[in-house]
Image 1 (tube, rainbow, N blue to C red):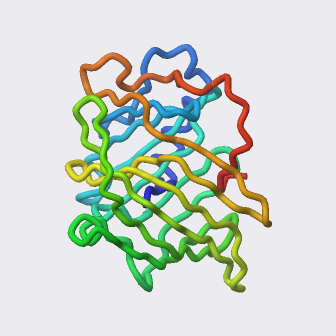
Image 2 (tube, rainbow, N blue to C red):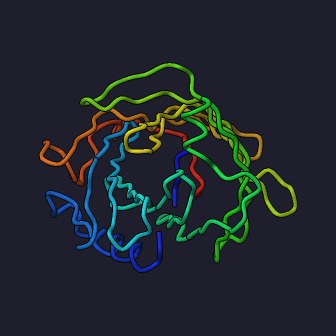
Length: 233
């Protein structure tokens, strides 16, 4: 389960430079943060993965950009639990509620091949949302720039406090055991009876010293008209 979730001060520090991004050659992270991977996706987006010394041990952060600038900033813990997020397009943030019914566990997924989860997030702008779902390894793998990715099959539902299904999604993602992270893949999301396809699969992955590391310009899929949907909408 890949997260889409930032503490307000760091989120603002990251989002603030969004306007002049096109004038930059590389993305600038806060002083206490170190980038370790950049991912170009099929969906005209680019993601930077990084850690910050001021965070609790095991936390990782990610920012996503499209041609207009930053669209999302988020953090996960060592078990890839959603910790906090800031969705730029909708202007809403989320934090993980305490005492989840079934915490997400990267360890369980890698050791048993399957992990279920049932947790809540709290948003000052949108209220409480419950997320219920599971991830399962398919046994398929791919390698990009030396990074081994294992495919997962996932299903997830977002549920209101009244029990209404706000949206549900299914498809495939990828995990990397070494970095304990998820990367997106192809899937479909259903909202109010209408289904939207998407494919955020990684196309290129770069590391420190590689061309394209911390780049600001998405390279793939930017001329494709898509009807995909995201929770930002």
